[in-house]
Length: 219
Image (cartoon, rainbow, N blue to C red; front, side, top):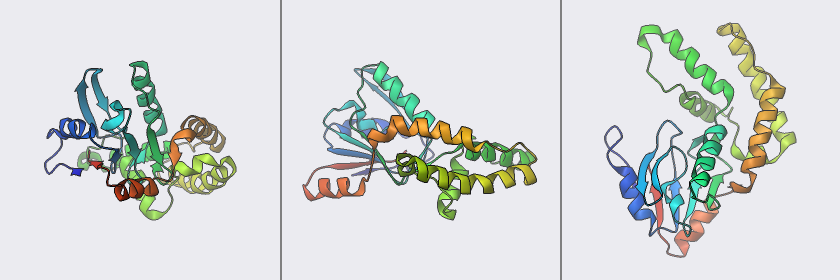
């Protein structure tokens, strides 16, 4: 079952997903980033979920952040901590190893590009969503699975950041980002998120083969 919106958001998808999630074995957030999400009201209280699938309130439900989602690790960790502090476990949360990560330069570019447009600015949330999707298509993306191998992460990050820093300094005239600082920051994120990162397509296929309900959550 897929729950999507045909308008501009706020159609009530969150409530529908929350009701269906109670019966689902797997709930998959399949697109977008932390610029969207759902507001859920249940016996635990009122929650604004930006990345975590709405099935997180049901212990029997596996919640997957799919490969079509772009993930800001800082936002996700903050959301997980907030849920935990309010008595909601996140042990059943799984992150696709192929989900692209929002990096500090994505957020920088989002703001710089908006300022460059001046009066024709798009009006983005400046969370780096557009730039990270552009990198995904251009194959410059860094994915959640890269966090599991620190040596590979450094190699990948060095190549990408060298290119991004040229644009930051030569085109926009701003200071370059520090490779070491970004690397250390994302290593910390990796240590926290590693237990949740895995290959997810097989999990979904197996659930479907068992005849279980898989809920696709649009946001």
